[in-house]
Length: 263
Image (cartoon, rainbow, N blue to C red; front, side, top):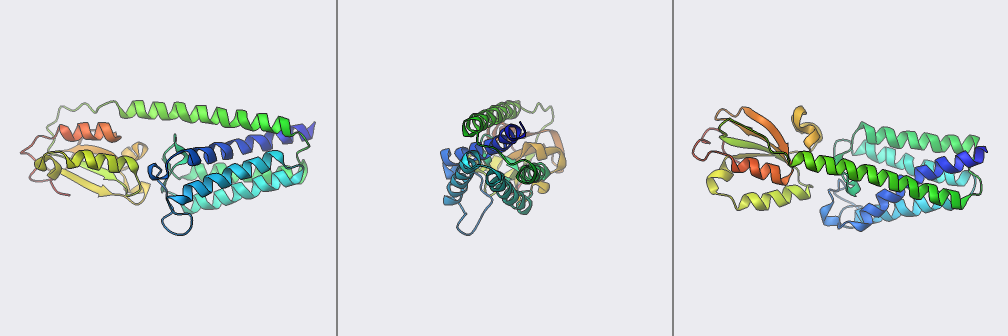
């Protein structure tokens, strides 16, 4: 009976690896914010290599027998824990475009817990010989996590589409972007087509770390922006996403931005 539970748990751990790997393999590398800037794992080949490794690892975890399956899972999540700690604060598409987030304590803790669970299974109750059970459990685990991420992404996009209602006259916009943000590049193309006076009223801050964004805007990620008055003071609610930021820029009152302009 214990081996059945071990099979279930180890297959549940393989689910996120399958989902993360397939998401990276199925998404065009140029659209993924990738935190590795140099070495063999840099974009555009890095996401594909890591995604392939995650899928292969998940297959091994599902098909290998006994303690070896748990050991492979423990090593995989141990490596992911170290990587998450090293990349803390940087933007990473861990599950492709369905979940763009800054690597934080939750990522580190989740991977560390998974590694510890796998070690415990390897030591005390190695999985048995139930590959069919593990395959279906892994598929259900990946599917459930994928549905959760999809719904979460839908809610995030819906929130981004809500414009910031503002009764104040905007003299400018304080805009936060990052170098590895595909949406930021799309926004730049839109803003380049705006009137020169409107572009001059945008103060752009290129962030390197999630903590570089004001605390009340961090949940929005990048691109995000807030309207400012003639003295550079934030007014109205901040917005996130390409469309809402562009809409906010369009509300700048031309001719009132002498104090705050500049990029």
